[in-house]
Image (cartoon, rainbow, N blue to C red; front, side, top):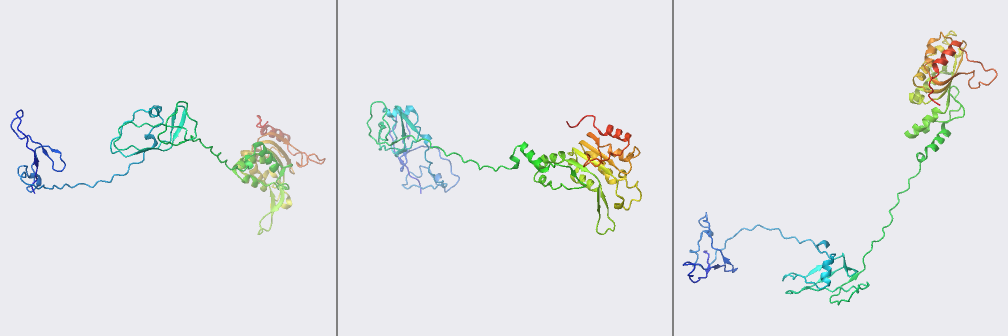
Length: 407
């Protein structure tokens, strides 16, 4: 259908000249229509291609359909925060209290609900406004005057002339911070052995590991003090190892007991094998902690060693287990005191070079050649150590440290 227009003819103006200067108005909205050049439609049957002259005589209007995209519905705006209304400004509160002019609200604007939890200071009195509702009627253009009367909330009135109250406003006392409960104390940790002072722990170690007499491996009569306490943790092992090996005196001597397997017909003497096993078990680190050592050298017993056919073979200077012990002590031991006693059938001569060479590798601050037996040197029938004088001088010169390692 052709599009129709309502045209209003105007009189011919002498200044503008001849022409059609009438203004066209839209029939539905009543707005003026701008005259502009229409773009030629690329389609023959398009409604845009119909000119105004062709459709001027028709009364109907062609409805041009425009596809409008679907729009997302407007989500409601979030509520206004307290920062949008700053009631804490003294200038604004003073203007309101003194009746200053308030800008008029446009028509059609709904009523406003203001919530101001922040305090407002007015003439020396702190006023806390909980809820303030202002209903402005439509068409109101004058100023809005609020008179605040701080006597309704039970607070003392301010200094100055009283103000009339046209709108009831509720007041409340300023909120004070409630005392926070004290933080819960952490559960008290139980005090253990490692929490004791180091001095007290050392005293406990000494009562546990230090014996009154020597640790005699040949006669283990005082071996009831077990070292299992060292296995509790690494710290206890590091602290107590020096007391166990450093403050006890160890006594090494030949053990005259037979040992062997059940399928062996003849059992042999144990000798120095138990001492060698002890040193290999504790290792080099604990061997270096030994400070006091007494060593008694004896020959093998004939009846307990049937394999040896001569006295020379039964001498301790040829015992391989003893040579292994001397080699281990010479490599790792850091002795403070060393007591020696040679109690063989023959005295030690300078010709026993192999035995003396391994023995001289052991160093100590003090070296003494004591009487036999070492366990009871004070008895009357105790015998002196059997060694040549040259051997004694050589041992004292070689085994004693020139610079003391311990005080």
